[in-house]
Image 1 (cartoon, one colour):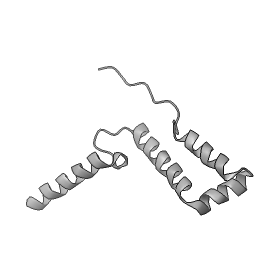
Image 2 (tube, rainbow, N blue to C red):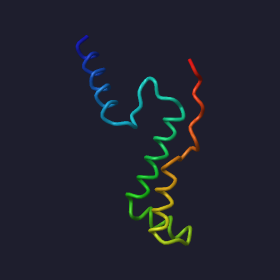
Image 3 (cartoon, one colour):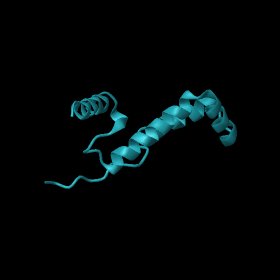
Length: 85
């Protein structure tokens, strides 16, 4: 029984520390936004992938990095309207 409590407390600690891990109240939209932002940041962090994108788009690396950062603002469009309670 002690292991179950320990696992749950570790999971709660991870969810409070890292936004992208989600929690019970995470909506589909929030999950997708986190996934897209994680992907874009990974693309910018890996030099070879950034080079590949710049060659494929025939753009400068700085322009590709700027475009990826712009897409991180609203990667899935504006948030959906929340239903009033």
